[in-house]
Amino acid sequence: MHLKSRNPAFRHGAFVKNVSIVLIAALFSTAPGLAMDARFAASLKKLDPETRLEQVCDLEAMSRIDRDTNPYHPDRAKTDVISHPVHAGDTVTGKGGAFRSKGRWYSFSFVCKGSPDHMKVLSFSYKIGELIPESKWAALGLWR
Image (cartoon, rainbow, N blue to C red; front, top):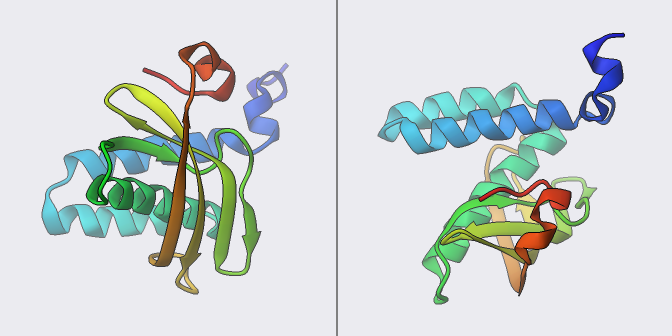
């Protein structure tokens, strides 16, 4: 039996998306200044357009929540944790995102409009939801 047939992540494309999240997070956190931008853009261009838009919206969620007036300082955000977002052209809308701040995960909903090439965010709005209990993290694919 092949690895693909045993691992449900391969059947649903989640493996590719999860690998891209790890790659983009690693580039985002370790590459300095302009070098990071070029490497990050090159990585994004390798993704399918929907995944690319979700990735730029993940980063925008972290940035926006961090700089807005609230007690949160996210180091991770995912737009598809509790439920999958809905894509309509260059806009993705979700009610099941999550972000991690100070070791805790919180839910959030959002509307994110991207550029036609899905390489940048043109507008982003969000609403922070409830703390996600640690007892639910494993089922949602969240980590410490």
